[in-house]
Image 1 (spheres, helix red, strand yellow):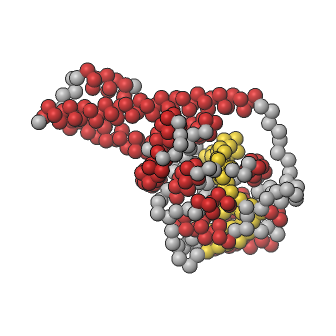
Image 2 (spheres, helix red, strand yellow; image 1 turned 90 degrees about the vertical axis):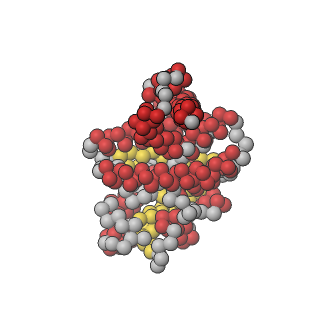
Image 3 (cartoon, one colour; image 1 turned 90 degrees about the horizontal axis):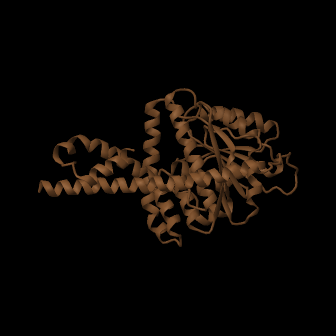
Length: 355
């Protein structure tokens, strides 16, 4: 019985090592594609973005879903009110689900900018049903734009954000667009520097996925959605805490295209304490794993090449794969007392895994 248990655990260990090896190979392939794409962009002549005239620009609704964000709501509203775009084609909707002084601060800013002629409204719901997903659905029902630019409360977009993103939607099959994200407090501590490095790597990988036409995962903020795409997909689904990933997956399973603009950068902030970091990652991990299991069957039914399917699986289940690392480390000590790890396959597997 002990021998069977030993072989069983060794088999599990080797399967985990194999999964990680495949994941690393896929990452390396995408990084090479990203490197080629970045070199090509550096060789291109980039034309400066001019001012927006009043003709030929489609109506855009800027959606700001907020909930108890008193520390950052004022700078968010200041930033979006500085966006350069024809005034007649732009509206700003502050989707306020707050229960603290955020509402008062937001209303004061709205009154100030409305007096200056800015088209800005505060929208509150009587019942906070569906959380952020429900808030966005409610906001889109009252929006007039053909496109939705979405920013979370801790984001600050550049003034030319819309001038650089909206022209990309000349292709009628382009459903959504994601831009790059920078971090104002990246040098605050070792924790924030680690997160900035991790996020920077993820954004660099996304360049390769976008270039290769593979499935990709986006943040759901500092992005633009085509209204007809959102409506065709049924909007955001409140049944998962990762409503942004859920909508992105559904869009990519259809005929909609996406674009990733790494050079258009909105600034955000990173968690500065270990507890805030843990809460954020727990929510992300739980939501992404739920979305992966929810959509994996539909992904497998899509007409994809073997390589694109492998990239999709690696991307969708990356959180689960990382969780497997913690399981391996936690079981190392008790298993060392019960299992014979002298076998050559386990030694080679351990060498590959820990290298």
